[in-house]
Image (cartoon, rainbow, N blue to C red; front, top):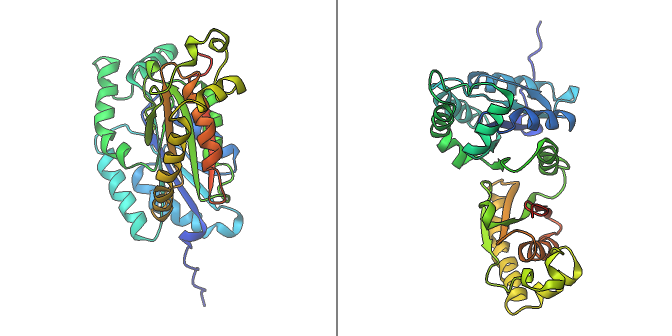
Length: 297
């Protein structure tokens, strides 16, 4: 007499699909997840996602409750297989989160050149040809990802810290909001879900005693937040975010990036980002402060 195996419980296992542009930092992100206690499967063919998830769910009694699959793109059939695999997972009751790591073409070229390796899709063409081909192949997937991580201006340690902030403490607040300050002169963050422009406020750069300081200093923060429109702006953004937060939670979103920019990412955007992070942090929301361009000048 044989005993039937119990049905795997997909609700007891958290599943993450880690993908993105080659050279953007998938391996670093995977290593961080492994250090955080996730069971990580690297270079998994998309067709094996459902069998892997099923095996993981059957092993929940052995402590396998968080599984990450790293999906690499090496052929043109990748995208169709990936979409089919995701649909199969969702049809079986899974709710996988797709994490997409990205970087600018310039950053990717620089990284491949530094390690003297070809892009996996460049063939006999230029490195940039392979990057463009991969970006076209993954364009729709990127737009549908639950989280996009822009690694263009991040070193290995900064990327590791960002991934840790996203995934550590997943049993805590349901939504994590990264409030990121940045400088428009360095480009808008690729992973921004919302972008706000602080250049309507007077620039402390033109105040000699404030020029060398930044928005984390009380003198700069007070100067910025006491200017006409600053406090009202923060109030309006907090009010705007309330229905959006509820909607994100209903849709199962766990991480979003709210970006606040000024010219150089040193004074106005930093001060306002600090204020927004304090106001948005709450019982169901955890905020993460990221000052992307602080220290670049």
